[in-house]
Each structure stands twice: as structure tokens, then as C-alpha cells.
Length: 217
Image (tube, rainbow, N blue to C red; front, side):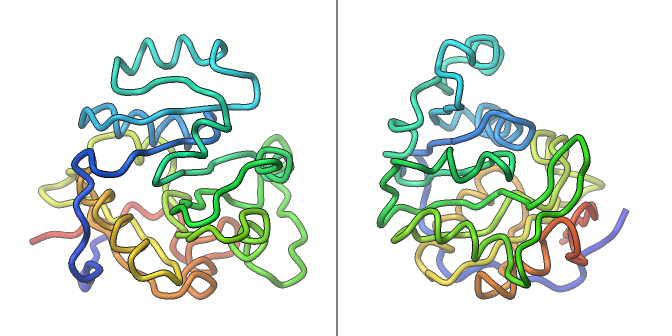
């Protein structure tokens, strides 16, 4: 188990006790894990995928009444929208959605099964590419660097709090995401601007992904 020895929260996180609605686009491993983390704390959210709400019946039945299956368009209307979609399908998933002004959590990585070959981003980070798909959105990179089980499982580990990194260029958006991270029981660490922080947590190539870091004290 690794230990985070120095970290700081974003200043004055805004409350997320029902004041901000949450949408999830993508019901794969990370999207479902995020939904499970929300459901554990009875935080309401809606979730959508490319196959429609009916295909998510088993998942929402498992998670309980706080998580509802909806269309992509309805999920995109939430105040905070987490997007976790296979990289090759990301452009299609964002087509036709207006996310201007909304906080959008980029939980994507430019790699996917079965080959796990990294996409050629021509030197850019995945968040730079993603931001172009959601013009006007307030993008925060988060929830992409941990295995799905560590996102969905209890983040209180070894007497501490599991670390979850985030980065972005909009200060208020980061405060809101930091508050959500804390409400789920994680210890959020702000890595700074979107490009710099995203490069540190990106899979593949970043030095921080996969490590199960815990903040004590």
C-alpha cells in the first residue's frame, strides 16, 4: 500500500448535498463503478449508455432507487456530467449533446480492450482531445486513474482515505468536483491545470494511475 504524505484539497469546496444534479454517460466499468459509489451514499444520479435506458434495467435494479436510467440527452442536462466511454466511441457519444457551461468530468483514457493499444493523440493529452468534443464545457479530469473496483469499493482503507486526483482549468468546477469526491469518502488532490494534471494521470503513460494511494491523518 502506498501512502500520500503531502496533499491539499481545493479551497472552499461547494456543497453537493443534492444541490447539484449528476449525470453519467457511459455504463461500462468506470461509469458503473461511479454509479455504485454514488448509490452507496444515496446520492441521486442518472445514467445513460448508447443502447438506451432499457438495457440498464439490471444495473439500476442492483443499485436501487437513487440511480435512474435515462437517455444520453437527459443525462447531459445534469449540473455535473461524468463521461466514461470507450475511446473509439467517444466522438459518437458526444455528438448532438450541448454541454456548454456544465461541469463535465472526463473519466476517459485513450486505450481500450481488447488490444489496449494507445490511441495516437499526436502529442496531446486525452483531455485536450476530449475538450474539443464538448465545447464550452467546464472540464475536470478525474476518476480515470483508479481501477474500477477501487472507485466503487469503500475508499476508507488502512485507517485512511483513498486518494483521488483531479485537474482542470475552471476553479469553481474543481471546487464542486472536489466536494463530490469528498462526499464519496475519497481524499481529493488537485493536480493543477487540465493539461498538466491530465498528463500525470493518463493511462497509458502517466506516473500516477493504478497506484492505490491512501492519505492518513
